[in-house]
Length: 518
Ligand code: NI
Image (cartoon, rainbow, N blue to C red):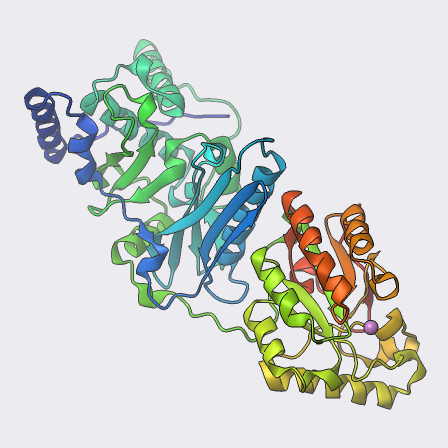
C-alpha cells in the first residue's frame, strides 16, 4: 500500500470526550466487572436502521432449507434494476455460493444474510450488509457497507466518503486516539491498520522533527477518492480497516465498529463502536461524504423509491455469479402449479415459454408465475413451426401470443423460444424479440424418465447454462426437486433469462443458446 503522509493537524479532543472518559473511569472504579465499552457506547450511537422500520418498502426475503444447510437472505427492492439492489443481491449471492461450496460434511450450517440502512435521502442511500452464522461459519464474510449516489446513479465504497488517502490516515489516527485515551491502549497495542497508521505517524513525526527538510514521499500521490475507480482501489487496499464498517452517529460524527477482542478493556460479548467526533471529521469528508452524512441524520423513509414491476429487469449480476436459467416450454399445464411450489422452496426463478392458446385456461397460474418473480416468454400461439410461415403470419402469431400474456400480467414477453428451435431468415428479420434456445436439452418430452432428466440436467449444467424442460409432463416436474437440491448445494442461483443474459444487450431476431463463459 503506497501510503503517504502530509501535514498532520492534531486531532482535537473536545470537552465531550473528557466528560466521557470520566464517566467511563467512574464506571470502572465503582462497579466491579463493569466494562468501559458499556459506558462509551451510548455516546457513539450508530445510525443504522433495520429494513423493517421502513413500512411499505418492498423487500425480498427467502429461506432455503436443503438437506445439509439453511440459507437466509433479506434485502430491499429499491426499484427495477436499481444499482444498489443489484449490488446487494449480488454480494449476498456470491457469499451464499462460497458458503455452500465450503460446507463441512457434518451438521446443517446456517447462513443468515441481512442488511440495515445507514442513510436514506433522495441523494444518497447507505446500506450495511451482514452475514451471520450461528456456527461461526459466516464470520469470514464480515460486514460490507455500500453507498448509492443518485447523482451518478452508482454504488460507491465507504472510501468515497473521504477526500483522499491522507484523510483516511487522519480518521484512523482519530480512532487510535480514542483507543489510547479511552481504553488506555499503548501505541504498540493498537490493532491492525489503526496500529500501523499510528506507528507510521509517530515515526514520521519524529523524522520531521529531526530534519528540517521538506522531504516528500514516493511518486504516486495519494488516491483521490472523489474518483470512483480510485475509491474502489482504496477500498481494496484498506479492506481490513475498521472504517469499512462505519456508520454516521447521531451527533454527526462517525461510529466505527471494532472487534472487541482487539481491545483489552472491551467486553467481548458486546458490540464495540468507537466515536469519531464531528470536529475530527470536518476537513476529511468528501462532498459526497457530507451528503451521505446529511442523509444519515435525516433518514427519511419516504425518500425511498417505489418499485414497479413493469418489465423483466436485471436483479443480480450473473457475470460475477454461478447462475443457471431453468426454462419450461409448452405450458402452462396441469402440473405447473406444483412446479411453482417446488421452485419457491429454493427461491428459484425460472422462465416459462408459454403457448398463447393455453394462457386463457390458466390465468391464475400466469399471475402466480409473475408474482413469484418468474419470467414469461413467447412460445407462439399453438406451437407451429415459425420457419414454415410467411412474415405476416409470424408477426400475427407472435403479437397474438404477446398480447395474451400481457393481458393477464401486464408485461409482454421479452424473448421468444421458437418451437422445435426452428427458425430461418424470415423469422430473424421479422421478430422484434431475441430468440432464446438452450445448451442443455434434458430430452424430457421423449424419455419421460424423472431420474434420467434430473441426472442429465445436473451433469451438464455450467455457469451460464440454459436448461430445457417441459412442464406439461408430470415426470419432468417430478425431476425438479433433485435438480434444485443438487444445483443449489453446488452454489448455483436459479435466475430468469433476463438475469442470465443480464446487462448484455440482446438483439431482436438474434439467436442465443446460453451465457456460458467456457
Ligand atoms: Ni415446445
